[in-house]
Image (cartoon, rainbow, N blue to C red; front, side, top):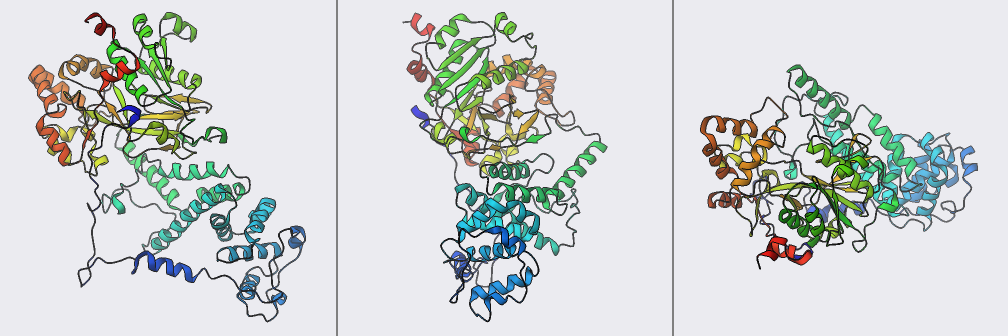
Length: 611
């Protein structure tokens, strides 16, 4: 699997699942647009014919002086074009009616927009439009209404002179266009635009295109969407004033879906509080981090990535963890040993890409703070230190029993991210115990297009009480873009200034394989710690979860009861493998860890002594 091109994902596409077709009399699917995209493009073309100009008619030259046009006013009679019947003159008169007794500069802006919506406009039209916004953005924003400002941003999408102008213009054009469509449909619902819908009822569980609904209580889609556009606008001084003014108007308007969803969230939180239901604790604020241009590298040849991990484990386990990620192309591994282990440190340090730190008394004294009692706090501390000191572009904080399982080289995946992304979320898959050497991992239902109901088929006794069918974490881990200020790297989150980073993204079929319970003895021996101080502790006392299952089995059936649970839920039994594969929830990704250790470190000490 050298270079990260190893295991294959055993997933089949779900292109037809869940679709509901409306059939016509001749048993053919009803088409939203008869004729498909050929007809759509033809209809678009009818609206793209260029304006025609009669003799003597022309737009002002590129170097026109804008100042006199602010003092000059337009009259609705439009005597300037006389009786001309050109489409230019027709549009001129139409805009003269709208801008009657208003500055001619606004009329010029309208004529530029009208020309740029069509093909074949005069050669200097786009440059004149961009120059107008570069020099007069403050004036235009002050004197044009929201409708014309949206038209302007749309025009940047068609005729901007830079990549940012075109990309941001197109993105905002799609946003405002979709708002116009769904808000028009809302007019027929009987609901006022500034009144939130009731949160108790939902007509369906899924949206079109098999999308999951937005999580009203905790979703970040709105923040990521709006924040990403705001950050992107900062890259271009010409479009920035217009784009950010429109986004400010949008979040300040109380008649949008964003405001309604905010009200629905507040209503739901109030209802939960009234019932005494405690939501899972955690950071509530989110923020969008600005990415300086010099950090937004997309060249896979120069991009560097690495990992940080606080570890207390035997040398063979650490060496396999390190070797796997070196084999994937990691440029730096920051390994912090939670307890001094000189022989382990010396073995790992043979590879120059591995930076080993022994967290002994001297280390903690240098931190100018006592060693934290909770290992989770120590993990966060060293991960944040590594983030500040690392020499890589992207850093992931993961544990020694976790293995990145990329579908392509990590450098390519990271280089392919949007330059405004600051966090890459990697969701977990769980190793099936006993599959070492030919590793098998199980997926959560939603990543295979399945519903939660499948869990009771796979785990008949316990599936209803195991979210995702996992006994380990479901949140996943993160790569963080380095070089940003005020960053705190947690176990499952990356924060800036006390708020969760909102510039998150993900890559399809990129998972982190969690060897949480590789076999029964390991699970049994670590269970007590995990139940009292580790990951099995509950965050919501009202729900029956893994801790309750294990406590009940210990009390009622002893170790044999827990062993039966482990067999049903965790082991690579033929029954479970067949069930997972039938539901496209099985990932085959052989790791070949010992071969990687030999390749990157040489023989382990015990291997040398047994020769």
